[in-house]
Amino acid sequence: MKVINPATGQTIDELSEDDGSAVDAKVARARAAQPAWAATPLAERLAAVARFRDALVARKEDLARLLTREMGKPIAQARNELGAMPGRLDFFLRETAAVLAEETVHREGADGAAPALEEVIAHDPLGVVANVSAWNYPYFVGSNVFIPALLTGNTVVYKPSELTTLTGLRIVELLHEAGIPKDAMVAVVGGGVTGGALVRSAVDGVFFTGSYATGRRIGEALAGRLVKLQLELGGKDPTYVCDDVDVRAAAESLADGAMYNNGQSCCSVERIYVHRDVYAPFLEAFQQVVGGFVVGDPEDDRTYIGPLARRDQVGVLSAQVADAVAKGGRVLTGGGPLAPGSNVFQPTIVADATNEMSLMRQESFGPVIGIAPVSGDDEAVRLMNDTEYGLTAGVYTKDRGRARAVLTRVDAGSVYWNCCDRVSPRLPWTGRRHSGIGSTLSREGIRTFVQPKAWHFRRA
Ligand code: NAD
Image 1 (cartoon, rainbow, N blue to C red):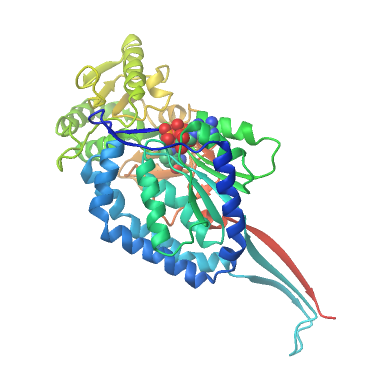
Image 2: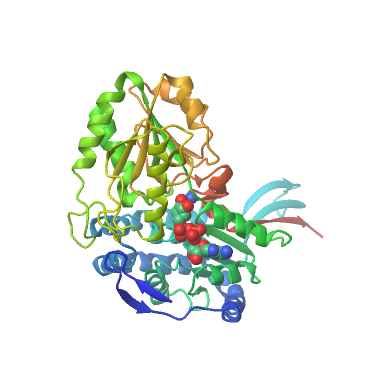
């Protein structure tokens, strides 16, 4: 398997992929290691993760540079991803004990000695967890799974995306150096075929981050097997800009939400509906903001838009723009790759977009945004909900009550007032419909790695 720098097209490494029997052997190792890992005191598991946290801080610059070379994330944004990791890990370090705590829910006949009857809820790990991961934020989406899985006593077989394998392998190395046993955290290397072998192997839970298409395929592969399945999938996240906003501030926030990480975020803003009373000034302000983005070499500190990680996404975005233009959309800026054969897609704004365009229906996952005028709140709600996805949605307005009324009617896992493209470790990260099943982050995202055990104690 070749590791290719998407900015230059150069091969930076070659790795051998794990085939089905190699995957099975690694799962067997993780299985054998699981009871001892689960029996390791929580304090030791927490200490190992705390050392991993410190290693990320100490090696931040090298890790950021590797990520940039491997998937094209602009270096400043790679540093940002690593810079946010301690806060995220601290959440898991702080909260795991409370989730694992046993709960006595009933007692009878407590007369000073042991009670006659006691009912207790305990939490057992699932066992061996498969973690099939995406490339767009490999530190975030990976650690949302493998950290709480490990802290709760599971062993993990982790397949980083084929587009960030070197980063994934480095993460695993750092976990081992921090004291996580080698067989408690095992990496498998490869693309879809290896991922398919992993989800079909003898694991107790499959935790997937990636596209709807792959998530559905995994769901089909697991039908008939009674293992836990969690899917964190894509989005077509809408925002509504009301008529009372500071247009410039909303445009700055939303241009960043649409184009940060090159638009390659599951919660990137993908559709913007603007009240018609502020439509023209909003378009002008948005265009100005996007015009200021530095486009090009991801290793340059100033670059905001680098290459797309996937070359074939250039074709997907070009087709969305062509379809939009054919249906009456107006390209205000950008529209195609920077140069023929380049992975860098120019930041692109399409005005007068409609929900009939693929640009407003299929996940773009690139620096391309469709903007549409709406007559008011009811039309905005109808258009925002006109999607198979349900990851995030937002409203920009000075009026919190109005935002709340609109967002109550929008069917999405996360909703934002005057912000976007935001993830908090304290809140559940969860998608609806084609955006997925289950939650990571928050206490929900720790609890998802354990299964309850109901204890009935009756004194003899
Ligand atoms: P992808 O679906 O192409 O790949 C994801 C992973 O699945 C990779 O590791 C890949 O090798 C593996 N895979 C591919 N085919 C497989 C198969 N048949 N069986 C098992 N595994 C298989 O997605 P991607 O391009 O890596 O990531 C982008 C997508 O991920 C976008 O849709 C984005 O919205 C989504 N995403 C969602 C979240 C979230 O939290 N909801 C976070 C990040 C990314």
